Image (cartoon, rainbow, N blue to C red):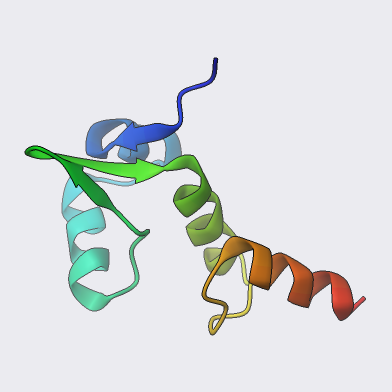
Length: 77
């Protein structure tokens, strides 16, 4: 089974950014959605994908969910 969530360290390694940059993105409201399990901050695979699509400009900035954004993109083709 594939991993369903990244730790901060794993996310940063996967996307080639530093922890400081990730925390700055969260402060600015531009980071991926996160959740906590006890003291650990995790980022789900779907949140990481949604964030990446927004960074690439393929997901409308006002899309609230990956599905909503995906449907919007498909409908515009």
